[in-house]
Length: 161
Image 1 (tube, rainbow, N blue to C red):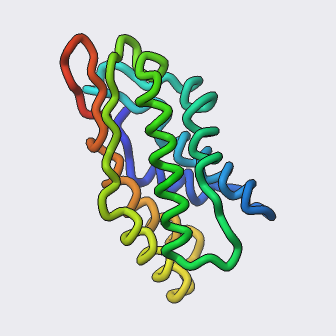
Image 2 (spheres, one colour):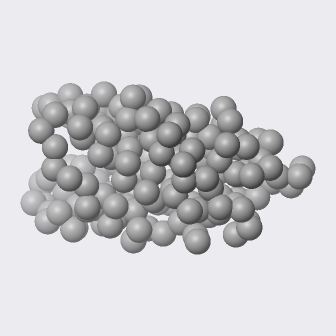
């Protein structure tokens, strides 16, 4: 199954409202983990969902530090730090995520912080609905992830889609 912007938007929309920053960090990490679950490299080898839940999601949640009242840019920086940590878990143990993988190269997330900050600002200033806000964030995060990372299996590098 390929990565899908609508799958990400739905996962974001379905996040349970939280009372603390830590709960929000966990919810966002789980939403991104749901989006990445069952993704494939070269449409051949699916990512191991148990490893995503056991290692990548906690790494992402632990790397984000949401601060109430933070600027959009600060919030975006926290999200990017979480995404980098999520993919760092994949890089650290490629075979745990894709059977036979010897190397995972993560996305660079170039420009993502600025794009997220702009989406956060647009969502709040435009009084977006939950669905509209989730779609806007999915539209920013998905292109930064889809086909941006690779997994090497048997000396061949495949895009993660």
